[in-house]
Image 1: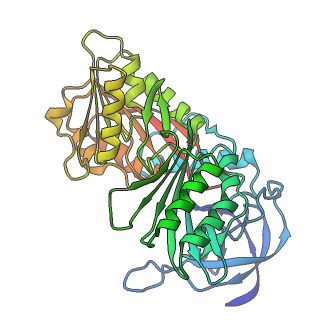
Image 2 (image 1 turned 90 degrees about the vertical axis):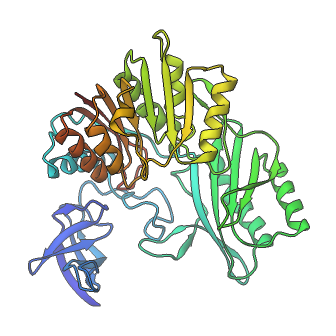
Image 3 (image 1 turned 90 degrees about the horizontal axis):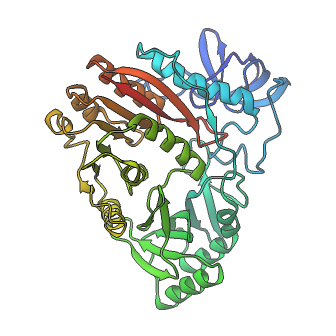
Amino acid sequence: MTAGVDLEIASLGARGDGIAELNGQPVFVPYALPGERVRVRLALPRRGGGRGKSSGHLRASVTEIIEPSPDRITPACPHFGSCGGCALQHFADAPSARWKHALVVEALARRGLPADNVRPLTAIAPGARRRADLTAIRRRNDVVLGFNARESHRVIDVTACPVLKSEITRLLAPLRALLADLLTTAERAEIVINATETGLDLLLVSDTKIEHAGYQAIAAFAETHDLARVSRQHTKSSAPETIAQRRVPMAAFGGTPLALPPGAFLQASAEGEASLLASVIDIAGEAKRIADLYCGCGTFTLPLARLTRASHPRVQGFDGNADAIAALSDAANAARLTHLSAERRDLERRPLAANELGNFDVVVFDPPRAGAKAQAKALAQSRVPKIAGISCNPGTFARDAQILTDGGYRLDWVQPVDQFPWTPHVELAASFSR
């Protein structure tokens, strides 16, 4: 490492790092903002050039902020800078929103797509996140429970998190004590906590051997802290087992109640979900036949089925997760939504073909971060009049959007939604039409 280099930060990179230049090379500086003059310690170049070659990108850590940006604010969390969950707590809200909006615009522009139809960003306030994915490691005398450090597998012990809903944060300390009794030294566990409408739902993913006393301790923990359910899953198993269930963890999508499977995917916040759903409903309009691809438990499928007013409507959901499809089917049956059906289907390996897509007036797709390249190619060959695209990755969305526009679709508008404040992540909804 080299110390004592002064740099001018010119911009923010896609991961929230400040970017400067030194001898013609870009330097990535975490926790630095555009317009700042900082003193840094240089680190080794980033890898990524192939065959172990350097990508030419330099990294640096700030040792002194010589001239701070007027957009710099005091971080809200005591763990900021060590915990890798947030990258931008030092960045004021208004310029942060402009930067996230620009991420979407730039992703589209790189693909030659129009960016003048990107709507203003919808921001979701901190403290609304209803899902936490935590890691726990048993040390000799205690348990570390929290999130990974930045660019590291090292786990930062988290005692507070202003991003999460308060009921999840309050559970951290007692959960740490429970895991100290369950795990042996050096054992790890992944913990998924969902704040559902009937209480917290906790899934413990670990190969640790739980004895009878451990099961009793978990049941007592659920009772003491009023949890809806605690389940465990072996890391190599796809079938969680319920250890304690005091209430069925429930969600309501469009007013339709649904019993959630353990570890179910939920949109990060109810507010973010509502914003994305409003876009989907706007795009669907008066459609009679709707397909929801990567539908999960039915975040959009169930509301669309509720709102479909046409005679003889048909709404179909497709997803590769068997538990999600089963939960969606059960909810539709209980609500007597006879025009809604759900099918388990791996859309990456077996996307709906153009002739299958021709049966629908509107298609909704909400893929994982890797996007929906194969499905987008099939959509591009179809005659579906309207498409609603949902994405948590502007880069892969832009790739898929280019496939659609090359196939004859028009990108009508894009609505960015910031469900992950203080991070470089931004979600979006988009409308396509033939």
